[in-house]
Amino acid sequence: MSKLNRRQMLSTTAAVGSALAASQAQAEEEAEEGIKVGKRIRRVAKNGNIKHSIVAWCFQDYWSPDELMPVAKEMGCVSVELMDSKYYKDLKKNDMECAIAGIDIGGPPFMQGYNNPKYHEMVIAATKKSIDECQTFGWKKVIAFTGYDEGLSKEEGAAHCVKGFKEVIGYAEKAGVTICLEHLNTRDDTHPMKGHPGYAGDDVEYCIDILKKVGSPNLKLLFDIYHVSIMNGDVIRRIHEHKDWLGHIHTAGNPGRAELDDQQEINYPACMQALVDIGYDGHVGHEFIPTRDPLAGLHQAIKWCDV
Image (cartoon, rainbow, N blue to C red):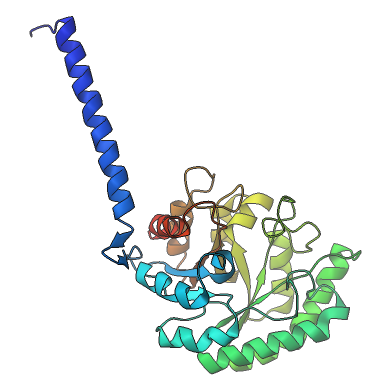
């Protein structure tokens, strides 16, 4: 075998370095170009195992609801969720759905919930109104929250939740709509939508126990992977353990509730595969707060989660 002299080695190293740099530049260029095909956004949801949805509130600073719908559809999403019900007709026109509907109580719906009996009348009325709208348009899920503690013990709050849900669950059952109780984190106090200090339902097991005590197939858990990873962890094991209670899924990067990228710690492809493995057939709503180009962030999130 012939030996390389110093000049040959330097020449070879330089050539390899140039090739790698060119390859990286090409990859970056292709990644940038890959978001669009001409004027259209490239479809990234292709495998059919995950039903992708976009959570409207996260992107309201970038697109109006009318603009967001075609963006979502072109990427292969089937839903835009938690949007004002006045846009439901437009969703239908775009051949899309609302994977989970919100409730209107005149303020942040997660602060005043089922754990406090003084809010029951208001929350139940808002939930029934949302159920009626879902029945009209064919949507199947409505969101729910425990609410904040407001001096109540966890035990008192859970008992009130059970009572409140039992008052409304028959209405949901008759309409063929599932109410999904969301678990939220109380650790992040840096932003009002990144964490919710004071929220009662900040433990997955606590929420599951409430669901079990109500005992209806139309009351499930909104399993937000971002919040679960902060408060409980062990996400994939919990997906398997609570497979019968999962009604809806949300995603975001942790920490920061930002994009699903290599700057955050959750292995989303593995989490999505776990959902496929348990036979989950609901939607996955992407609910991150953009820190850069929102279209690129959505494109990346959907591509990464489309196992």
